[in-house]
Image (cartoon, rainbow, N blue to C red; front, top):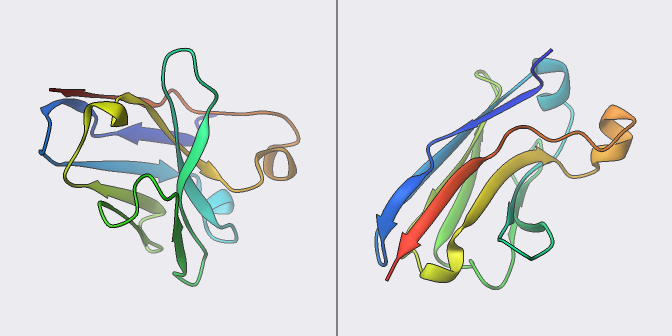
Length: 119
């Protein structure tokens, strides 16, 4: 059963923008803080933006001022608007809850969506 489905990635030039979307199963989305994570080749996955069920947001310093996370509770969807993209933003982007193990009982991740920023 698909729990999470990310979309919206692609190839963009430095300075450009992309908007990522993540559709989550309702029982996961409705009670959880959600986050966008990314994993670049050879690096660990990192949390770059988070949003609580009430809409409070937080960002990693590396994306603060450039990325905006939002959620549509009626659609069980979380978004990541990415502006002023840099080559170092290149990664596979995933959405998930903030506490993955507590949510699913194991380390579950969706397929992610590739973002590539060319210089």
